[in-house]
Image 1 (spheres, protein in one colour):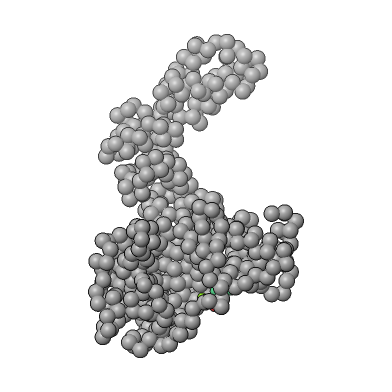
Image 2 (cartoon, helix red, strand yellow):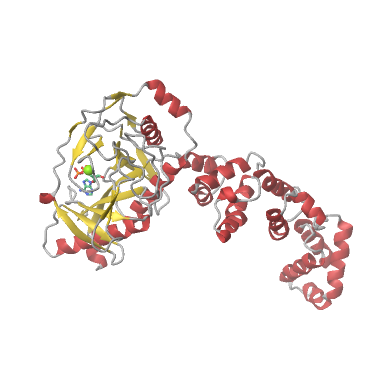
Length: 484
Ligand code: ADP
Ligand code: MG
């Protein structure tokens, strides 16, 4: 699209994220809540909505919702009321979902996202409420019929609705990334978008910059990755601007995203929208959340990525980049937390995590819990570097690979491989003189003014000394002998 036209407009985006909760059982029954089981095996008469069955509230779902609410700084409602949302669909045996309508468990609060200028931005949360998932209609297995798997029916969900505070597809990408990180840190959802345990609907409108009102919003569904949320929004912004430029009016509608074509397609307009006939759920008592319950949940909250980020940047002197990388994955962050119990060299510990450790994990497709070196041994490696016993490069190239294979301490490995740095000047002097002997023309050139040859001599020295020369002392001594 013409840059000039694009720049006349601003986009407004609000996201609705559904997170499947990692509870053992479903929201209102004892049926097992698990992904990937044989179809229609985790279904009892309650899940099937047989007449006369009654739902029973799973307490864990309230705890999970409160955890997320506390993490976002939301207000937690003292009383929980439930509502029926009625509609007909083959994968909804009861004919309704039990949800929360006017009285969500959490209201307000915000999620902090990264922005390109580095300043960050708060995306306000409208509400977080508890509800249940429907079953799954499968259209692509049988050629003639749609199949229904009801294992998912009754799975507890949290719906997180944002205010329309998002302005670009990149911000939307960063927002969903933060939500996913948060639910993973809180252990309430596995955040797997491909398997549908985290889903996102995007509400998108555009308006002329400076307009006093937002434009008409369109809701886009069916994005199975964060990247596709971004693509769908990008497409939709262009489509809406082009329509307006052509004198068309945007109609409020629901559209689906076709990931192969990269386009959104109209599914239903507002006129055809469901009337859900919400009314209070008569089969579930209202529930009181006691202050003590909230306090208990608060006292057991895990460290959150934002808190760790702030501590790493403000107290440990790490860069935003380093801190963001370390806190991106909960497992990595917890490993780092444990590592710095054993070394106070925060920067070196961060470098090892993001360098050699991550490369190893990436190379073998491992998660951090599969990493073979304990925090104690990795910290011991950092310590002997700090003590000048080995250099960084020897540690990385020689000791670290050995540590992956054996349980020996890094010091024992260094001794065994004869890699302990020799900083005694006599030994070093011997090596330097040997280097001079073997490279007389270069010594001549150095003494004639080619000072940049220092690097050349250092390289030779490291080779001759088998990497054991302490670089700092060697450098000083080398210069002294060259200038002599
Ligand atoms: P509905 O009643 O249609 O569900 P809501 O007011 O509940 O609409 O808003 C649903 C979502 O749409 C929220 O995430 C909200 O931030 C977002 N939203 C509301 N108005 C707009 C708009 N004009 N443009 C983009 N998103 C919007
Ligand atoms: Mg809504």
